[in-house]
Length: 470
Image 1: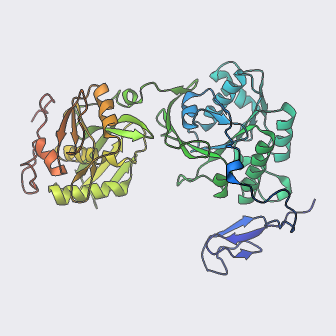
Image 2: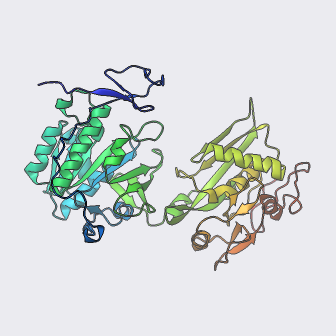
């Protein structure tokens, strides 16, 4: 068998080299050479049929959607899987990708579909043990532990599979390519062959993809381009909550987020994510505030925590579950616009429950949590904060503020600190303020709108909140 010739192309300048080296000989960039197969030239006149057709005569291409049986996954996929589609499910090791897809495979098999589960990482016995924990194993669920692409394609044809799960794409190899397992060429070409087979035969293909330590999907960037849908599984491995996001979806919108809980018997639907995240909250603790945030189109309530302590060395800033750069900006606003002395302190913030937060509507919540921690005084237990904070300390409206306020009112919160433009919502009192300093003044930090940097900081609590002794 002849070895397939490969080339190495620079991702910076596009130059080709016959072998890999650490530095590109054309542009002198380091570590930019990527192994790939040379492009196949199509002979002139080889095309068949018309090159172009009138757009008005093209069929709309509407395809039936088949539910996976996992409600939150169907929510993210816009109702379910489309025949001939290829979906890449990516996430960190141990986050629950294999459990989620095995559960979806069992639900589709229970509905009568022929499903093939390709386990290229685990032994067949390990997959059977996990499937037994998820429930009775359907008779139309097939398993193969092959890693050869040719064997997998043969197994798909043998069982006439309607749904194929490949766990994982990084461990599949085609011996004809000559590259090692997991190389750029292997991952890209194996994925392209599976995509071609899914389109030709009309089966739904689900690929498991690993991510790097930076959170990017491992393998070539073209892997995300050749598939129809990319779903990321997010969460903290030390917490049970899991979020499903559609990063790319050719058959529907990408705004929905699925919320699941990883348990011993599989992924469970979370009926009330806000109540789950706030179940163990200690409202009397300083540095704690509840913020309604948007995950996709769904509002949920999360607890933000902050710790401010004298620095033993150079002061440091850490944000767990959020962006450290954004937190540094907010601390600068508190120092300059409010006068809160934080320069000689370590500041740590955390989003409780393992949620990854990137919503700018949580800015005011972070500011109040840090101020509460710095002054060692709790904020009102039934208060929430919703606003984006600008560099001048001004408060700006967050997206979908009425929906956030309605979610807070549903869970019994009584007060919300919001910008002046926030519309009223039944069941919750709005305390409007134009700046962060005004919010802190309403909490008793100082005169409204004044910088209190030279005053003795005493953060008064709203009526009804417990006071700390001393």
